[in-house]
Length: 342
Image 1: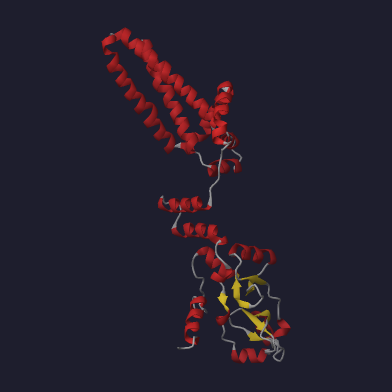
Image 2: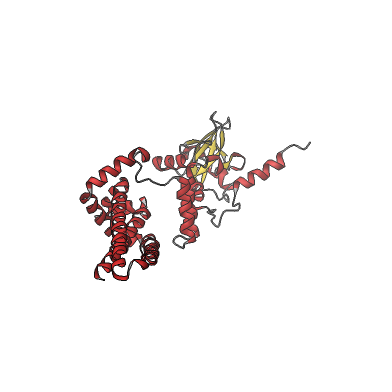
């Protein structure tokens, strides 16, 4: 009876542990492994090595699992015949098969898949040691599978999977709605073009460069824009001025000076360029505003750092002085009014 119990424990117990280890190993994500490595955890490099050569730990798990099933079932069957008689072997085998299915496959794999984060470090160290102990079996298994897998190991996420993970995090309550939207917008930043978020030329507030300070405050003091593009006699944008500098000049009595005296250079970005490229340009050159041009260098509008942040956040940034929330919508409405009737 003691041997029968030992064989049953061998068949079920070892298989239970192998199934837990397999479920944990296959559930570990690249992001989790990278996080452990970034935090300096010892389990990080161990799990990374196992996932990079995943056939090796799987070969160890399946080898031990097969040995446990085969030896345990065979020994238990023989002992059952010796203890209870050969006429009950069939019934015993059926019960043992059901026990192995439930106790060493279904339950442990559910445990491994559910609690893999807590179990992963321990499982990683154990599997790493077993890979060394069972090295001959690992070598044979790798030779048999390397032509099929072509060395496939730890893989990252593609863009679609990252967006799906953000949605999943929102559904599970790990991310709120705003965080999910920001993550998805960041991923899509290189898909959006500058023309999608710029302020179109038709609604850009701009002034002649020869306008003087006095004229500006007499006619445009109420304008809410803090950066104002300037154009020359040929209607070509030459730069921009800061309204704050004009206020200071006016306070100092420099009313006859022209706006061109306070002009700053205005960088240009192409309307067909991506928002990601534009953001990088803004950061590298410390820009707050840029001229948007087409492939021929013709002005199409302007874009500000605020426009890019709005695309990232997925919301309109509006202060108390903004009279129009969406200047692109205003441009489309004006275009309808200007279109000649037929």
